[in-house]
Image (tube, rainbow, N blue to C red; front, side, top):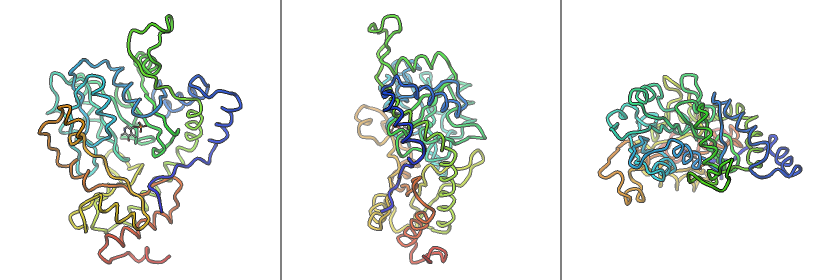
Length: 381
Ligand SMILES: *Cc1c(COP(=O)(O)O)cnc(C)c1O
């Protein structure tokens, strides 16, 4: 079985973890946390980093730091993870969803302006699967309508938009370090920002809004979303190899592009757009009308039988039972994200994989979906 992801932990992870044990610094007071925050923020061209317990927590803290008023609207893609809508709703806001572009699968920025109302307070772009959102027109709208931007860069470590790092746009950006992300701390996340006041608010919300002068007197409700020194140790070790990870992912992505060339059953992502080169955090596929099935679930079962792990694409926010029951997204219909959810999945892309594993996956994809055709250079063993 080739699983969809295997993390790579064979750098200095063990060494730095052992230091935590030897020195006794295992809590959120340990010295690796500041070091990790500073190194990662710098990598995003940001002044401040606030490391937290996971990427969902980073979004919740970031949204709370923006001080939404009840009923304030935040515009986001429907095709994303529940964490985004959840953070907005828990802060008293209203999520307003936008459909995806058919080619990049990212939020269609041209649809944003029509959804801006007097209540709109912020835009939450989410970079999907390794290609960035088209940020220039989005930032222009934010300036024009005085909207905050909170950038979910959980899948976009190391990715650039017109040469500028994802994670450097808007008031706040958030990351996840879950094991399937480019670098991992087991569980973990980070908020990055250039605004000193927002950074202070995020630090306070992360730590229950304890007050420096009167610790147990609270002016605001926070969370315990602290990260541990153990996690930061992993993060620092992973950062040392971040460029190597990117090189490896790009090589695997190029290999998938090459060996799947001509396989009509699938729509593949573009290798580049006018504003970015795909970083291939994952390699997504969308079943075309020529495929033997248009059901991603059925395709996943067929591939599992052949030893290939896959993950389904996101299920859009406007089709989430829990959010519908809460009264959101009545009569919303967003055909591109609905199609992506039903037809899309991604294939193995773990950092522990070798080029031959990618070749094997491609061969199986051709065998299952190629109607008898298999390119010659995949046939030899
Ligand atoms: C993974 C992910 C998150 C959530 O991160 P966790 O660490 O799993 O909580 C948020 N947004 C996006 C786009 C993600 O891919």
